[in-house]
Amino acid sequence: LNGERTPNRPNARGLVSGVQSHVTRADFARAAYEGVVFGLLDGLDALRRATGVTRGGTGRTVLVGGGARSPAYRRIVADLSGLAITIPEGEEHVAIGACVQAAAVLHERAPEDIAQAWGLGAGTLVEPDALVDRAALRARYAAVRDGTS
Image (cartoon, rainbow, N blue to C red; front, side, top):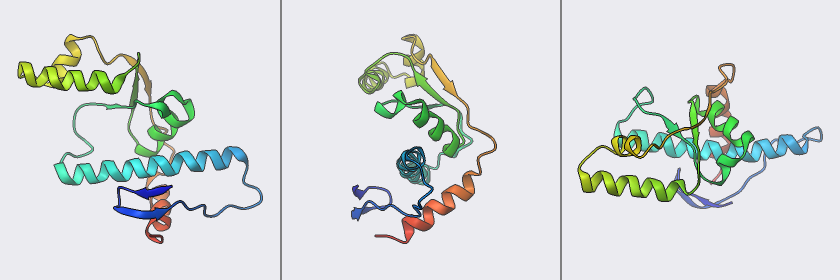
């Protein structure tokens, strides 16, 4: 609620839009999750544009952090991204990721090789729902996002 990184709007504020009397607490909570995930996907799009890495590349999508503990958040990330996501087992994934990167540089190996050698990567897989109209949802989000500053 205090600015946004992608798009770069450091002075932006949170916005609640389209709420009517029939909106339930569950609807409102889902909308909050969706707003966070759409912002995450905007960042992913920017990263892809900057690196030239396309959606069809190899590899997998791993979800870590506090939100990854929530089955609802996991589902929303998979559905809105259209990607199968893995929620790895264990704890301290960010620290482990930093260690993998350091070991990869030290040993001049690919991070994937280090992760495999260390037995990392097992976890819960969440497949996206093929019936979700991602393009329409992203377009609605973009219309609200771009109509504000």
